[in-house]
Structure formats: structure tokens, C-alpha cells
Length: 426
Image (cartoon, rainbow, N blue to C red):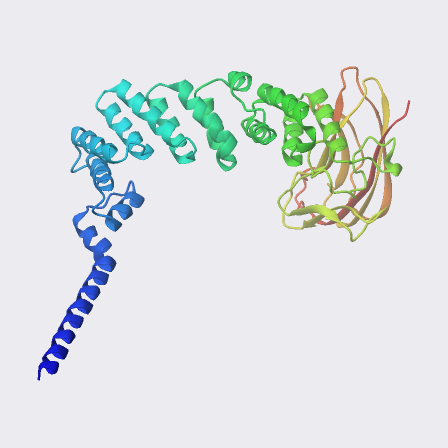
């Protein structure tokens, strides 16, 4: 009988112990959700809310989050109370950069500028490696009119956060002139210089672009980004700086190991046979155009020499004035040249067909033009002699078609152009 009582008591104790374990486990699982009902959500900092819900007994998280509620929540906003909560949070963890930063903003909203600067300085000291903190600090420093501090943080971010450099460049241009930025702040690192050159080209900052180009090529030209270098050449051509465009183009070719083929020596046209793709359709290479009802591109279906030619296919539905392709070519003044090439056509309708044209690079004045090719023609040689005037520096060679003035003006058919050459006659 005594043995039975002991057995029954043991079972009760075991059941009670097991129930306690189950309750404890359930509490550990449910605690974040239970705590969530007592904590108002705040969109500004979901990570902090998650930390408090997981550890509601942690006083730093509690004071820090309540400070943010008092700081940012419209219905509960009270800057004095927010400042008080942050002070209590900092007593728990005086090294919290996030709390120092939030405290700095509260001080600023309370008109306490010195205290705001001091708190921001501590936030950066305790977490100087945080890109997010440095970005927020830079924006805040602009509000504090601490422009030197903002520029210093942006400079650091340019080095450590390459994906956001365009944003940093844009902001820093609102704080200082590009020339001053280049002289005093721009990091002398190839990656930063290359991205900044790209930014300047996009903004068409020609003078600053020249300075950065020289600095970049003087530092480590082998690390030049070919597409950015080509964009720089294009910018120089757009602004008629022919000498800078030529020198940067030649440097780009040399660094990439690109040379003229043996059969093109003496020919001033680059890629006259449309055989190469290594210069990306920019600089002093061909620029391919487009027009309604016309498909323009390099094709291997028909060529006069080699394997490729420029093909222009018209679909018979439009009457475009078309520059199918053009190229800028440096020339000498007072010099006689011969432009030649091969043109073939198949079924070109209307009285206005494909022809070659030479114009002055600086003022677009026409020097010479070939006859227009329409109908059906096998490969035929085109020869256009001309002489450059005293002020000539470069020409624009165009492959084009003019709008027809006839009633029957919807052009159809196909034209091919190959073996374009420009040589001195003197």
C-alpha cells in the first residue's frame, strides 16, 4: 500500500515538471508575438522593433525604440521625451552609434546645434565603418551646415561604395565646384577616377573631364575602361576639340593593342571594309544611323571585298531622309583627296538613292558628293575627288539618302556599301 502511494506521488511530480517545461517552451516561442501586442510598430526601424520583441526585458532596446516613437510618430511626437529615452538607452549601452545618431537629430530639432554636432561625432566614432551611417550623417551634416564633414563622409563612401558613386558625385557637386572637388577631395584611385570621368561625360562637364582624363591616364592608363574612354572621345568630338579627341583615341587604340590592318595603310577611313568590331562604333569609327522604314547594319550576305559590307534595306513604306552611317576623319588643310568606295543596289525605288557625301567637321559645309544610286546595280566603284580649304581640320564622311520630292517617294530595295577609302592625292 505504501509503495502504491509513492508511485502515484512520483507520477504527479513528473507531470508537473513536464507541464512546466511545456509552458516554458511555449513562452519562449510565443514571447516575441506576445511582446508585439504591447509595442506599437514604427516603420523607421523594423530591425530595432524585432530586437525588442525578441528581448522585451532588454532596457536599451526598450528605451531606444520608445525614443524613436517619440521622435518620429506623428501622434506621439515629443522631442523632450525622445531625448530622455535616448539618454536612458545610452546609460545601458554608451557605444550605440544608432542611439547617438538619433539623439543628435533630436538635439537639432530642439535647436541644440552644438549638442547635435557632438552626438553625431560620437555616432561616427563608434561605428565609422558603417556606410549607411556615413550616408545618413552626410545628409544630416548638410542640414547642420557642416559641409566639410559631409564632404569627408562622401569621399569615404566614394571609395568604399562603388555602386553608389554617381549619387555621391551628384550630391557633392551641390556642395562644391567640380574644379575644387578635383583639386582638393577627389580620391586618386583608378576606380573612382574612372567612374567620375563617366559622370562628367554624362553631365557634359568638358573642362573638368579633361583634367580627370589626364589624371587617370597619368596614374594607370592600363586600367582605363574602354567604353568610358570611348565616351570621352565622343564628348571631345561633340565639343569640336579635335586634338584632344585624336590623342585620347590613339591612346585607347594603343592600350587595347588595336592597329590598322596592312591593307588599310594609307587609307584615312577607319574600318573602311566594315570588317572589325573592336572599337564599338564610337570615336573615329563608323556611327550607324537609323530611319523610318530602313534597316541599317553590317551584313555578311554580300560584299565587294572581305566578308562584310554595310547593308541598307528599305521596306517601301516611308520616304526617309537617312544618314545610314558617318565617320569623322582628320584631314590636312589645302590638300587634295580622293574618296572612293563600292556600292551595289537591288530594286532601289524612287529617284533618290544612296550616295557618299563629304562635309566640313566644324561647320557642316559640303565639300563633295557622289552620284545617287537607284535601281539595280552590281558592285560599282565610286570616286569623288575634292580639296580641303585653308581652315579644314577634319571632315565628316556620310553614307546617306535624301528625302524624295516626287509623288512616288516610298523607297524600297537594298543597297550595300564596301571598301570605303580616303587617300591624299598630293
